[in-house]
Image (cartoon, rainbow, N blue to C red):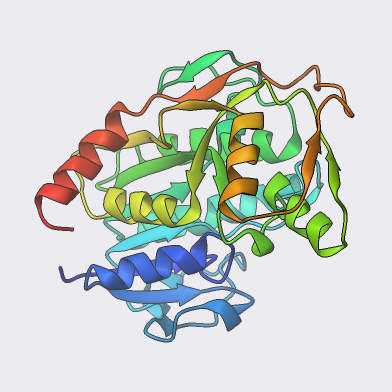
Length: 283
């Protein structure tokens, strides 16, 4: 395909994979990040401060057709005050891009916007965020849909679930497990492992994000997920086996947290339709 895609946060844990997946489609990729070292060389790297409030960024970025906005500070620290401090900056950036004439904005959200919930999460599931990261994301979601309501722009909000893969670049339980093995530990303190989550590999997530951006029929809030709940214990045991790790889980060493849902996953109808259509097109 043709077209120009701006990817913010392009050097981040997820962003690096999204850049590569977008380039594979044949799109012209403009990548922006304060730390550009990990960005694929086939992308055009542009060093601009997207949170500066400057109104002319759309033209400085070369008038992209699509903006995939993933830039976010302290994403792994859910109660960092920076989430609230920069919330309005993210809103202003997206509003200015919309006002300048961008055709489509695809914004990274999180399942944490929903808060405590048991069962599948769909587009209509009420949100009750319980940490600063989730509160800021939910506020941005609401404000961008409101801002775009009477504008000629497509908005797609990506509700992302539990990500793994490329594990030395994140702060997941899989990262901690690998570090424990590197330190020579033979056991890993664990919870009961009974809670069920929706796990998605970062490469699969990147392909989903790009597939969403490559189409305009399915819009609004879209779950980027597997759609399948899996117990944490089963997933971690699978990870240990796949990587040949010499370590055993110490079940029950930590109590299950009261605020963690016994089972939570994404309803996958929308993303399944998008991916099936993409596959049928040979993408």
